[in-house]
Length: 159
Image (tube, rainbow, N blue to C red; front, top):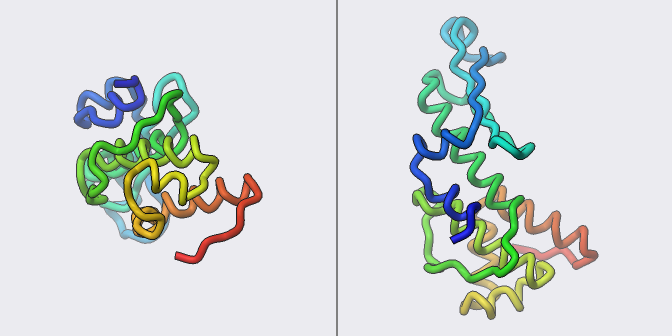
């Protein structure tokens, strides 16, 4: 298993050993509590320029968990492995602990096929429409998929 994949499946406490945490006061609506406490969290992956932050909750702990999840998805979308393998299981809930690993493996396959969804679907053993549905359900994944296709001069797809 690659270092990236290992990072993606680590429990939050272990994952945070590879990160730097920053706490700050969030701005905007939310009342007195939000403006007086440092409940917003920024998580930076050491040795990279990858970072994520969250300030959607009043709780610093929930914001930290949300930021860690966002950072893991950022790792999944931005770090590739040399020899990709299809996701071990093609059915994966977006709320599942291993969803970032699923997304990373899916993007490894897409990247290796030049973001050709038909070739990628064949390698995953599913139909191209099922692959597109998996991408479309997660706006972040679908947006990155479309961005990568556009960068390669591939036509837009309708979900």
